[in-house]
Amino acid sequence: MAKTPGSNQDGIHALDFGQLTDLVGYRLRKAQIAAYQAFMTGRDAPGLTPGQVGVLILIDRNPALTQQALSYGIGVDKSTLVATLDRLSERGLIRRVRSSVDRRQNELRLTPKGQRTLTEALAYIDQHERALTARLSDDERATLLALLHKIG
Image 1 (cartoon, rainbow, N blue to C red):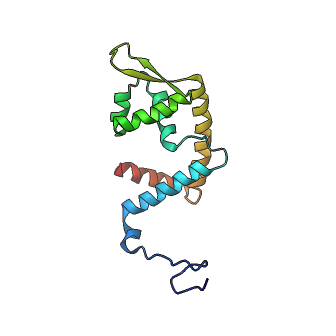
Image 2 (image 1 turned 90 degrees about the horizontal axis):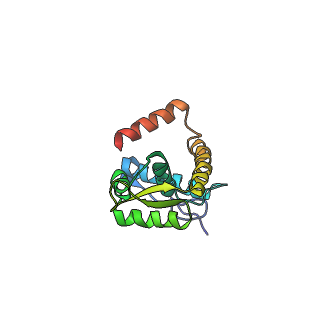
Image 3 (image 1 turned 90 degrees about the vertical axis):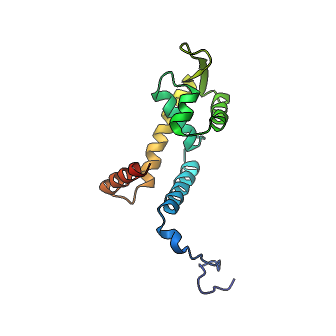
């Protein structure tokens, strides 16, 4: 394929991203996509999405966490969260237990398999985070985290 002005080495037209390159939201989204793809395709990937690992972490760190409190805390619609919890439950990673305080609610608990899976996932995340920020100095990484905390 003939190379034309503005095209890459494969002859595919290179896009002019215009103002997008200077938009914080766009750059955050591009970074999130890169992080997600690297997480999912990395060697020794845990077979869970980053969101599923996040849910396991929250269940582990918050005893007697209810589905409603989790939904509210992470800002996810209840029906979306239920689908995630169902997948984790079907894999034997979590269980729902009737709340002793309010029998209308379920508390979420990790199963022993869920605890093992979380431990393995956390080790993977440590490697993933190091690779993701390898081009940043320790100070740059700390600054990036501080700035992201200010945004959300």
